[in-house]
View 1 (tube, rainbow, N blue to C red):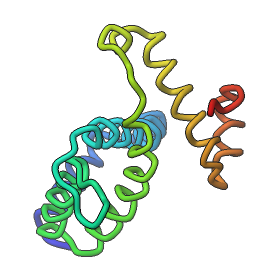
View 2: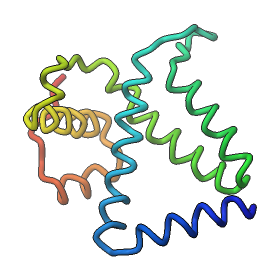
View 3: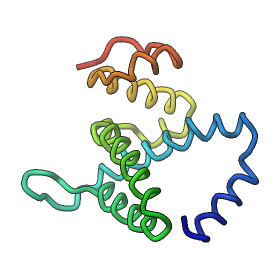
Length: 142
């Protein structure tokens, strides 16, 4: 691990050491990254062999390149996590949400319900555990 990365982690640990803060970050940061990737996936750039490359993939490459300057293992871990979030976020790009809906609590709640409906539709193994924690959003829409 590079000295720069050690300094970043030490600084981060100094401000984020409480159990509540850690719990919020374990949930909140992935949700923020998921939302960001879902929004960036709505910006198509070009197609390669039938796959549409979006701004989300370009951002993922840029962020991975940055992490490679810090630590190769960290870059690999972050790439794997980010690709997983991108795979969850890409289908959400088709969700149409009006700007005023994003500015209200109901808008965010609706987006989260739609996220879990999309997860249920794709039915990954962790969906059952997620529904036990946050509650069942109701039947998946087709």
